[in-house]
Length: 198
Image (cartoon, rainbow, N blue to C red; front, side, top):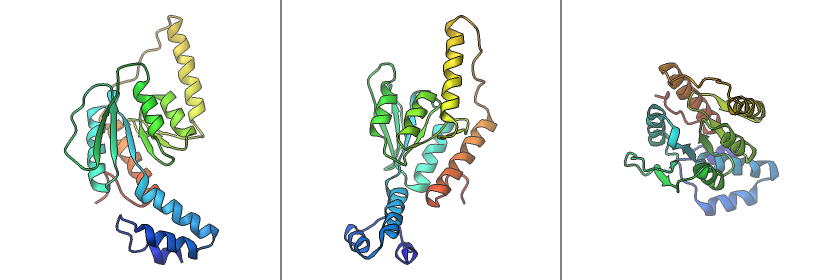
């Protein structure tokens, strides 16, 4: 029944039709309508942009144009972005975690955040969002607490003077892993391919 109403969806939903449709459906079917509208219309991508590599931002720009998903870069310094109705830039004040806090404040359930900051990813996941880091790792309820504990442990080692080294430079394999993960996520969420779709 639901399929017959959504088969001709083109990216815009008439509110009057939704209200009428909701009155005609049972509870389970109504939830399907709500989930459909959230996935297809309301999901946004937020980018923790100060430390986001250029190659990753370039992928996100192409995905925004391909899918029509609003993609907002948040940073405490000005970043040039391509002219696009789907790509936005939000500059915040300088300060520790100011950009992170702004992303969490604006985040809606179901939104995607691109970040390598594990504490930020934790806040995103517990608020009902999704998070992927620039190397293509997906942060989920199943792994985020363990990753946060490991991050805090390594931080304590560094604070005590132990050299734990740092992450390796982003390489082409990492970039491809990110593109693949993002593409899988978009297909799962709304049937829209990202960077790997034809």
